[in-house]
Length: 116
Image 1 (cartoon, rainbow, N blue to C red):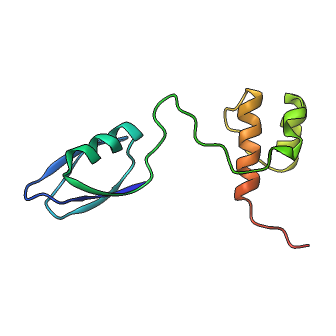
Image 2 (cartoon, rainbow, N blue to C red):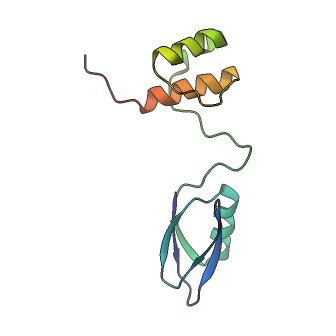
């Protein structure tokens, strides 16, 4: 999500993931921008931008910051799917091994800490 503030004297438009949005002078809106549109908005000089852009189409989200020695790479797709099920991890539409591993690592990195 990106917070966009129009710093110009007149209304300006910005292309968001959901479509064009008009921003009145001095107004602030929270929108989803692709990385390409974020860069384009920066180049105009019309806006103050704060936040992170969405991955561009076809670009994968960055992998979770999890150590690679978790053993997931050594498991088969069937084993990974069973592990995800046992840990109640939603794999969404992940079918490739790399996508399943990424989904498990992401879920583990965002899960609340368990007490010992």
